[in-house]
Image (cartoon, rainbow, N blue to C red):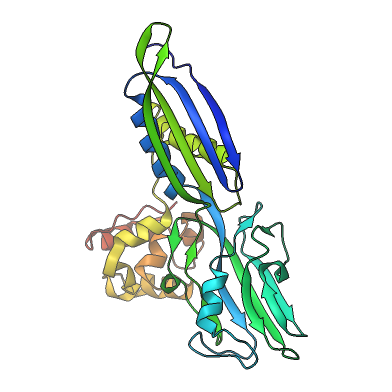
Length: 304
């Protein structure tokens, strides 16, 4: 098959909407590209969303706040609709301060970072005249959907928020026959993309194509997969929770490990060799003893 040559045109562009035509494609490739791009557009692109909120005077989300028309659940649901654009891989903080009452909108969110609110006209709450409202939110970058239950709460009043990170809200595509000279069996792919305003439709399509290319590159020229430390820990299961005293080590070796802060199998497996050999009463011989003891538990020990 010859190298593919086709055009990509943005035929129509409106607020948060793009109609993109890809043509001419070899027969069958309209469906191949259309289905692949649609899936990545909907689930593979990163975006920003509110992941938690702390409201002055509120201890939990199932309560009300004096002077605010909406209850806390309604306010949190409105926060979920706020969309952001920018570039930041870190957790970004935002604050909302209302001292005179009135309508609290997304434009009232003050962000201490490189992000900005896209849908500034979104109403978050209505506060009575003379009432005060103060809140702090956390904004994070992510992919797909993240339920509030996945986030730990480390302080009273911190409310985790369900987060939908995807900047693409809807995608549809259709394939039609098109002509190249006298040949009529080429495909014409038409993509329609609706976004949240944080990204242009054509940009979203290009980014999705880049993601697909990265996956196909791994098929063509595969890179060796190196397991991360976290993955190794997950494989340990219950064995990882055992103390070094429970795996049959000599008392001298076990005590030396505990004093050095390596109290469990999990901590031991993730330790660096240079750090272990520096521990008093440990050496290369001790590492072989540790490896043998862990081997009886089905754990491979090869400190980095």
